[in-house]
Length: 120
Image 1 (tube, rainbow, N blue to C red):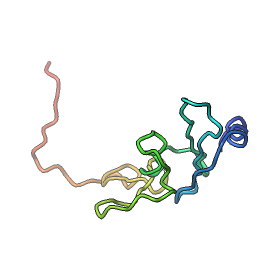
Image 2: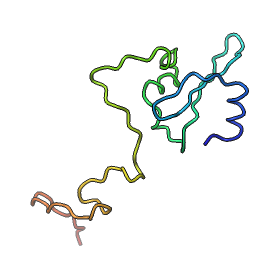
Image 3: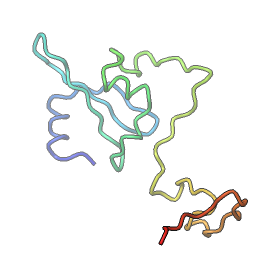
Image 4: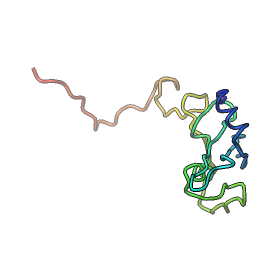
């Protein structure tokens, strides 16, 4: 859902460096003058949402790594979990027990809670 300006800039000055598992496309600027850093950007598949960018691509976009994860891919560590985008506002959002959208009922208080009331 990039703007026309972003799509035009990508077409004219962008060099594709890869795609992630969510379908986002990553680019860097081609033909940059000596001494200037190349711009890096992402074109999201579907609705733009920054949490859809996996950690390895995030590191590349923010210049933590020099090479994009598409060449060669970073080795997965045994302790790493699969990346999930932020699901807030979707049907897959986390709703704790007692949430209004989940029926609004929760377990009774255990007697350790005392409501505050103002004096006077």
